[in-house]
Image 1 (cartoon, rainbow, N blue to C red):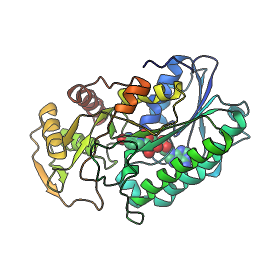
Image 2: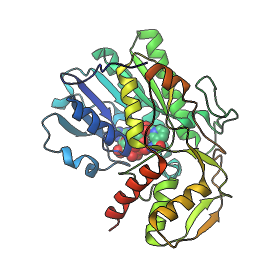
Image 3: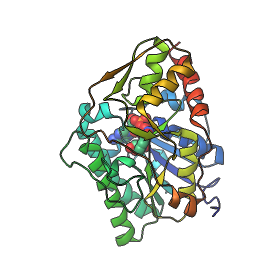
Length: 325
Ligand code: NAD
């Protein structure tokens, strides 16, 4: 089914975490549609560089603030109501789980409640960026939205998984209790330009290692799988959810599943690197396999990813080689 565009020129959209990897691509797409976009970020894992090209844009404002403390209501960009509030702020890489765990818990919980309250006041559509991590180490494959997951509530990853599960629960409670217009997207592994080279996620790590001629460090035996989605496809999916009246949760990503070993080999081949592959200890609770069931996204949103892994990886490698000089 086709979803008609609901948000465009004349609409004000708040994007939390707007200077981050995925959110900055979303900001670009919203600005291109004619929306007025306010991005709020405390730069804990994002960078002003990701939105520097919009610095002088008349329909874009970047506000520095920690959304876990609530929105800075005194800021001129905050006074008018928003038509949509899209909550994407959250550190998301495994290295962050150990180094900034409390910040992750706060942005998934306190910030979500603050933003939901603002959405009720403004009568805005509220979009929550949730995650495939909500399924934990899944015992159902591929993961369908009706599966409740297998999460270790006290493990190292729990700060992220459980904060997102709390955020989902809060979003649904506001929907039921306040009648708030909400949409939850469960995002699967996404990659592309503007990822941090040192963020600990497999693709930027492998690309950086390959470009530097270092060994690619694959965790465990490399047989664990992920489905990898190029950021433009994901942003298309998030916009379809925004325009729809679907509540979700709805999975978004691709069904193209690769083992970590295959991914490392592909990156070595695409970079033309002479790097070899070494195997290192696997992190705790690392999911064994992950692939979304995209039936709901296809049926309700008409979502279909279009960018092949070869093309997406080629574009990402080009970006990284430019950035790493
Ligand atoms: P990212 O770290 O690049 O972006 C997150 C942004 O949020 C950063 O700019 C960061 O500075 C900002 N932020 C964090 N805490 C904040 C706070 N308290 N106040 C204001 N700003 C804050 O990460 P990303 O990969 O682009 O992820 C974006 C969103 O998508 C996250 O919510 C993440 O959970 C979700 N997600 C991403 C993936 C993926 O594969 N990239 C997968 C699943 C879910």
